[in-house]
Image 1 (tube, one colour):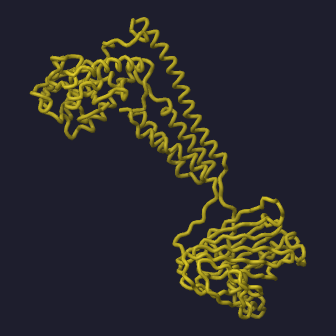
Image 2 (cartoon, rainbow, N blue to C red):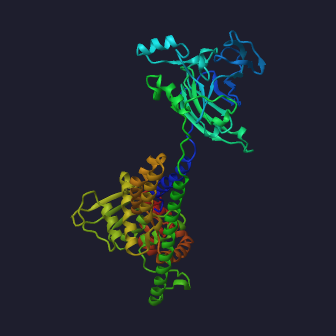
Image 3 (cartoon, rainbow, N blue to C red):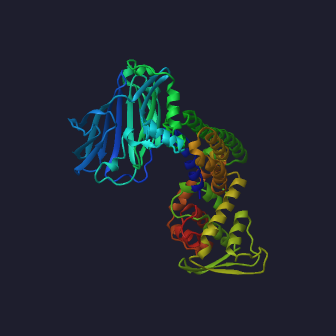
Length: 555
């Protein structure tokens, strides 16, 4: 009866909050929907020279070893092309062809793409149709038609447009720009989804080891373009232009109809303050710790009171358990012994046997395989739990004082009502145990409701990433705590532990009696009280199973 699925579920929810908060501190991962068939990833890297020249390397990683033709399309002005380390000529400096497999590494040098200003240097790997063609640009502008991105000036063009056997889908893209002070660079991307950036400084701490790393997803529908603003000190040998880097970027973006839709900022990976995870963990540990401390203080006080009461009443107490511990109701004896007992036990069976021993109920039959249980009209017990058992034996809706006799046959005694009977009588027994001060509500479970609310509020305030878990903790947590306390959120008091030790010793004596072990329910008038307690303590499995609402064990 002391199993507690509600408490287990609540503990899982509360533990998930700090774990989820810790996970929220980690950078967001790049999500790909349908991966591109044939192309596993693209890695783009550039190193910026003092005079603004770019040394560029692009690695295409394929998903198989199948040889495929690659039509290479270089940005205008590129030179020194090499494919997998082998110098390769390019027609008009733009087009080349190669056969690649598994990995294709494209390297080239690209001058003229960095402009230095007083407040920074702009790396422009994006162009617009009409750039450099004043007549075309004037015509487009006068017609009110916005410019479009020019793939010839991009970081790299659509891979599936120039690679054989590459299907549609997402391709993860990662890369870096290496330059002095590049860790402070700002990146804008077009054609790259979910752009993220992160500063990186080498272990040596040298300026040349600084880089801005980025990642994203290429949906493969267009060229991927980039505007980057790096410190002006990264290109000290490059002539300085009038104006500012910010104005240059703004002027370029303003040529498009909706620059905010075309270009996206590569923001740092989203992470949450680690303090939130620490606070959530502190609340969980502090709440449970406080609960156990309060429980220990309560137990110490109640045990002292119980010991004083036992001394005054002459109860054996610490002087050792007696063979007959006392007149504790058999169902309560089964409650305090709980899982410490062995064998098939049933507090319901013990109560029915006690009622039959006092001839309030009648059990007749030849053996445990077929018997009849009669509940006379107006039958009542002496304890709350006894009356609860009698009420369950009667047909549903029958008043306690109704002049109706009930006759039941078994086994099974309870038939389809068994689960509902077990739940109802379990609650009745716990209420009686609380009333007799043999059990008390668990302190950790009693504090679970306020702890769950506090942790949920902290999570809502500090960590957006755990919003769902936080609301679950705030709303569901107190309900689960109440359910856990209502069902079986109890533990033994000092008096309950004393009774447990005494009745456990008595159970050991009963287990040594073979007559009790094989006794049928009809033997109650021959064996008397020992059979009643044996059914509650696991020493009379035959009788317990015959009368139990689970046809086995409810303890």
